[in-house]
Every structure is written in structure tokens, then in C-alpha cells.
Image (cartoon, rainbow, N blue to C red; front, top):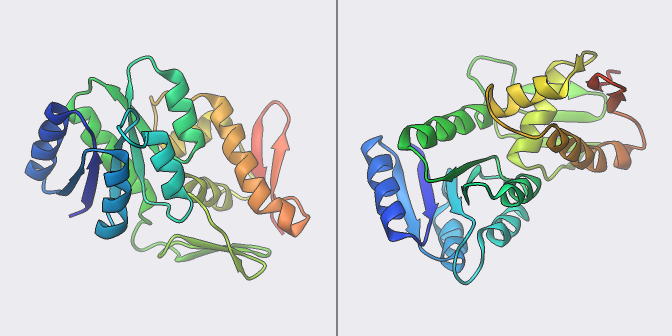
Length: 225
């Protein structure tokens, strides 16, 4: 079962989540500060991180930024209810999802399982996707362009995968949100524009060619060979 790193300084929430996740069969590791969270991330190699935004020593958003410098491990942020800016900053910094406190354990488990499903390639499908000089390896979730490795977050990888699986099709922002974050999930459509900007900076600019095309008034399209 997946190993989950819980980075949470509220002892009550931490104990509750730890107990419920262990009951569901997850392995858990606990950190009470941002600094300890980074240390446990390095030493424990978790499959997913539940990361509180408000942490002592180093706040959750800074912890996330440091993790994203060399890892695309799935991260779900725990934010205070109504703190929209934290949610936006978290998603823009590479979080895969967020959940507002207080939360039901059923909602947390549903979000965790949804993230784990979308970051793990389905069995039995093609192992690679290729478009001109861009290639995705679905087994190890790696990407290369012109023979050089791309440093992508999990969300960036899954968005790029969705584009490549639908090459030549116009994809609306709502369709992209449904595919990456799931239906009935509140994600601002502007978040899609931000992630497309990230992908273009890593793919289109180095190749000096257009892979992801803006279709005015409709959405985006992956341009084929």
C-alpha cells in the first residue's frame, strides 16, 4: 500500500488522519513542522504527501516549492476554509489537489485515491506516447524533448498526457479540469492557462515550435506532426 507523509502540526488532526489512513491500509509517516517534513520527505521517500499550509519553522507552500525542485511526488494541501489565495498559490506551486479544513475523512480518502489513480498509468495500455520530438514514458512518468529530460510536476505530466492522447482535438478548459482533477471539483479555469504556460515554457520554447495551440474561444489543442 502507498506510504503517506502527513505534515501537520495540529496534534488532534494529525492523530485522527494517521489512525484513519492506517485503518485503510496505508503506511504513514508523521512530521510536525515544515523542516521535519522536508527531512522525512528525503529519508522516507513517500508515495504521497498531505501537507498543511500553516506550519511552524517553514510554511507549507515553501515546503512544496522546495519539494518541487527535484520531485513530482503527489501533494495534497490542507488549507483553511475560505483561504482561496492559499489554494491558488498551492496549485500554481505544483500541488495536485487541496482540501479545506475541517474535512470529512471520506472526502480526504476520495481525493487521495483520485490523485493516486491519475498519477499511476493504467495497466495494459501503451507504455509510450510520442509526438515529433516529444515522448512520454507512462511506466516511469518521465518525459523527454529533443533527447533531453523534462522536469515536470505530476499535474503537468498528466495534463501533457491528456493533450497527447487527444492530439488534434480541441479540449475545453472544463474538459481538462474534469480529466485532471475530476468532475465536480472546483478549479478556476485560469489555473489551466497557468499550467499550459508552464508546459509551453518547457516544450514549445526549447523546440521553437508550437505543440500546444490556443483555439480562441474554445480551449487548447495538441498539434500533431
